[in-house]
Amino acid sequence: MKIGRRAPGIVQLQVLIWTAVLLLIFFSSLPMDGLLKSVIVTVVTTTVYAIIIYGNILFLYPVFYQKGRFVWYGISVAVFLILTGMLKGYAGIILLMYFKLIKTAPLDLPTLLSYVPGGILIYVLSLVFRIAIAYFTLKQQTEEILLQKSQAELNLLKSQVQPHFLFNALNSIYYRVYKVDPPAAGLIERLADIMRYFVDESPKDEVPVATEVAFIENYIALERIRIRHGAAVNFEKAYNPDLRIPPMLLMTFVENIFKHGIDKSLKQNQVTISLVQQNDHLFFTTRNRKADPEPGDEPGGFGIINLTKRLRMLYGDKFELTIDDDGELFTAFLKIPL
Image (cartoon, rainbow, N blue to C red; front, top):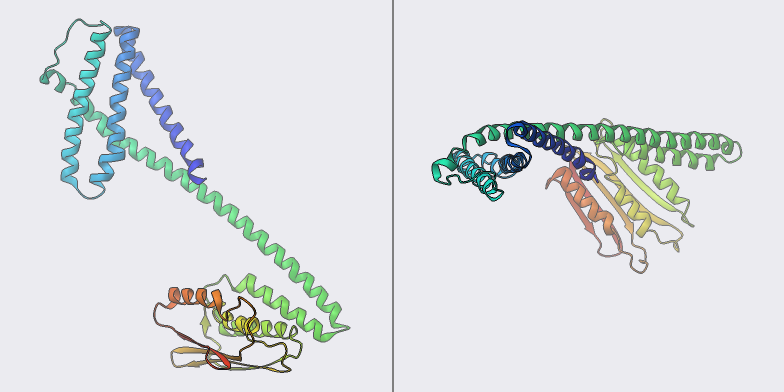
């Protein structure tokens, strides 16, 4: 779609230029040569000019010059101009003789070569033509980028207005609910914090580790209310509060616990989470008892696969990720450099 919008402008520009060239050649020769001869001269000359210009722009220049093959480019241009010049002379003479506008004319090599010098100027103009096309193409691309930027800024503004309206609504609901049910109001506040994290923090490259931990704790609190008998979560934390990490890096493990590691038939589910900083590394471990999987359900699934891809993009081969699915416990371990 973008190419479709961009192409007509360049095409129209070239059509306008060639129309002007046709008219200029035609009316220049019309007073001396008459109508029919002027038409033949105009068609042959314009066709050869187009072959020279587009042959250089679309083939010779990108194939030889842009690849650093300058000697071959010079040789190919010389041969190309000789052939097109001879073609112009030959085609013009043959057509004029066919329509009996001239009696006879020599078609020997010196005569045909006499048409070559005119193509040299057209070759120089082809370079100018190429620069002009590149300029207008770049100009249109710049205008499209500015338009897309403006549209993106507008969409961003809309995306910011809508969540903040929801935040304000949740705050109003929080104060009303707090009067009659403080625990429920606390859950509403956690939900608002989670949404604010998604809007304000998740698009960033890095967030404070304390912000990431608060997000995980809010998520755990909301998930626990869906479990009939509750869950005992032991979250060990030992890290520098100034530490920053990529957002949503640890969430996959916690999410998997409540998706695949909670047995709703048990009166108490034990979950252990550890986030510890040691030297120049951060260690994150989750451990939970395995629940009976539902049909087609696989612990980790695409979440772990996608996380692994993201870790490779962020840290190359400098991270360590292990999943221990043996026995009754499911253990996930992540080690990343700081």
